[in-house]
Length: 124
Image 1 (cartoon, rainbow, N blue to C red):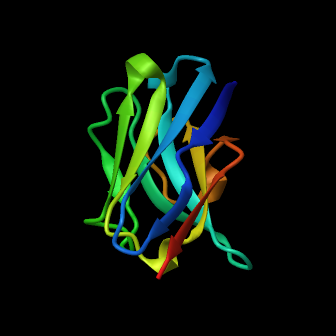
Image 2: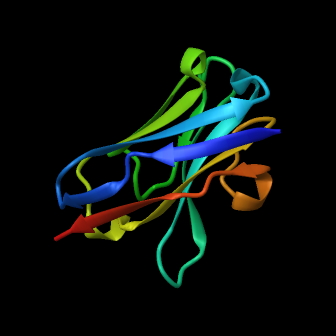
């Protein structure tokens, strides 16, 4: 069992940056692959990025954020980050942190644990 708490969301102008954090508690953090998903009003929860368990050598990104967003992890702090640069209005959504055992996955149903989400709003 692992508990996840996101933070760092807010309102930012287009072209700006935000860094989301997700603090985990419970079972050893390093044993989990971590993912970020987002959900805009009236839309499905979409994959954003994922980072493999352990030292996080393997990462994956959706095409829509590749080159703008960076996922990273700090196992000593039991925290995963999502650095978001060059934000666009279409990045506006609630961002969710997730955890699973095994390799990175890009579908929400593959993840076992979820945070409550943090709102990111990008104004144009």
